[in-house]
Length: 146
Image 1 (tube, rainbow, N blue to C red):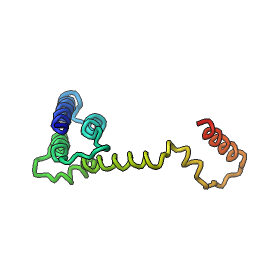
Image 2: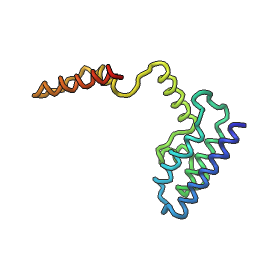
Image 3: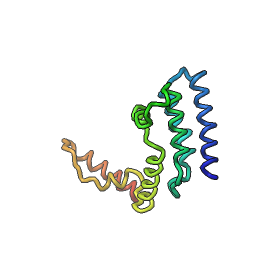
Image 4: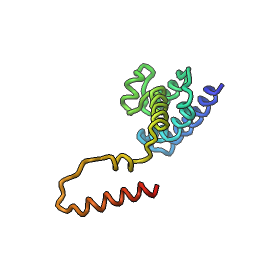
C-alpha cells in the first residue's frame, strides 16, 4: 500500500517536472535532473532508511522513465548506461546509502566537522605560529561552548 502511494506521488512530481521541461524549462537536462534529485528522490526514499522496502522495481521504473524522457532515449537503452550518463545510482543503492548513514549517525555521534578538526594532528608549515595557536584556541572554545 505504501509503495503504491509513493509511486503515485512520484508520478505526479515527475509529470510536473516534465511539463516544465517541455514548456518553460528550455529543455535543460541538467536543471530537470537536479529538480528530480531535489523533489522526487526524497519523496521516493522518505522513511526507507528505517525499513528498506522489499519491492523497489516500481520506484526504479519511475526513475528510468523520467531519465529516458529528458534524454530522449528509446526503451532499448540500458538503465545502467542512462544512470551512468546522468551520474545517478539506483533507488535501491540510494536507500542503502541512507540506511548506512543513519546507522553511522546513531552509533558514532559525530556532529559536524568540529570533532574531526580537533582530532586532526596535521600542522602545516607556517612562519607565524601565533596564527596556529589562535585557530586552535578558537576551536577549543567552540567545543567547550557546545
